[in-house]
Image (cartoon, rainbow, N blue to C red):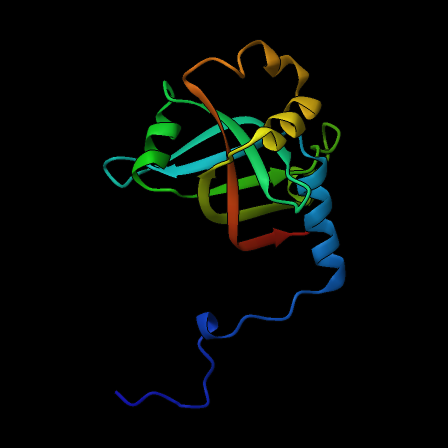
Amino acid sequence: MDSDPTAADADDHVPETEPDALAIARRLVRSARTATLATVGRDGAPNASYGAVATMPDGRPIVLVSRLSPHTRNLDRDPRCSLLFADAPPPPGEDPMTSPRVTLTGRMEVAEGGRARERFLRRNPKAELYADFGDFSFQALSVEGAHLVGG
């Protein structure tokens, strides 16, 4: 079967980011206190978990993870993951799909140094109770892609 060389493959075209879309995505990530982390399980199946987040000065999201959690073991095997940030849901009776949300994809890396700890605990002060336990570490997402749904 001949293919039409003028037909655009959806995967071959990445539209330019609208300034408003970029601002919405940045706001969602910067203001979030929680996000859903999706990792790749040992068997290749997706695994999602919900947890606290913060951001580094450059905007990279940071999480505090425990070696006792499946998502951390998944990240040790395969650092590819995504973080879903969602705006607060609307009041009951309104369509929850009208809330903006953004999914960031990339690779999680151990966040060395005290800056990640400082920023995470400023956003999530209760985490100070366990942040220094030996099985916990701060990790930062090296963002490789994003998908914004404006609501």
